Length: 68
Image (tube, rainbow, N blue to C red):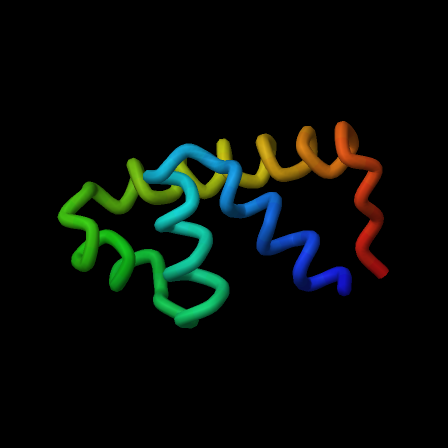
C-alpha cells in the first residue's frame, strides 16, 4: 500500500524529475548512467534528483503520506 502511494506521488513530479527518480531507484542506474541515458549533464541529473526529493517531501506532507 505504501509503495503504491509513493508511486502515485512520483507520477505527479515534472517529467524530467520523474525520469531521474525512476532510473535511479527502480532501475538502479548510477548518476553517470542516468546522465548517459538522458543525454543531460551529470550535474543536471543531480539537480533534478534534488528537486524531485524536495517535491516528493512536499507532496507527502500535502497528502499526509508517511512511509515506515
